[in-house]
Length: 350
Image (cartoon, rainbow, N blue to C red; front, side):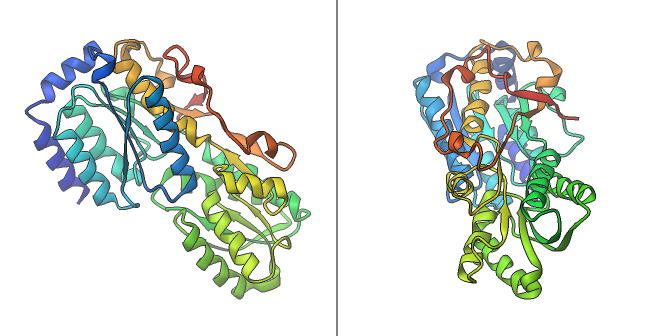
């Protein structure tokens, strides 16, 4: 299906491809002609909602409006939306995209290349697919999932005193984020040998699925469960709800990733142990800012360092000690100035 959709994208864009690529090389767009599009799975996920809100704020700062697209975790729907975008006027189109899974990135990149649309992707891509091999795929931004997975694993180990059983809620398995974060948990378990992984199951980054899975695993393992490791905060919040329903709130430690507002408040209040911030609002703005700067000629692709074409961005561990600093996250407009768009690079993606 992905290959068929990719072919459709390429066919639909063939007539305008040459002109689009010429415009990309020149960065010839007037600011008012730039079209900004942010695409995520859904707005019900607080992290992705904050991403779109950050995109809105950035667009407003440059006198534009962000077009918000959501595809409900459906890869086919995502590709159809991209196809429709690329079938129109792409001369000054800027897309900040969260591919549903690693396998979804290639057709999006190919379509953008053919149409000359400016593209920034985040989180998911195959290891052998690189922005440096493309002109209008400007950057790919992700986070060191192994690091964050281990950070919350270590925090969970500390919370349960270094001994006891835990369960793990995995994300969408065809994503680098889910794979890397679970690898981080495995690294934590090797270090914290008193902690035992009783069970693990995918809950697809979904609060509702995590609620169901957690209730099932709690029934299966009972009082042996001392902690719950979740690959994102939405699942951690689902796990918290399951604990509340079974009278176990505050008795089982829970950790997650994304620093969504409800999770940060839970960490501050002590019902969650830790989370990690990737700053969704910054992500929503920065992808559009990078594309806007290139489209308007304020930043040339040839001048972007190789390490900034695919990179890990900074992330922050949040515990009760520093949760107050993250309860009301705010973006800094200076972060989105063209000279500063790569200031949060933590290292090249290798």
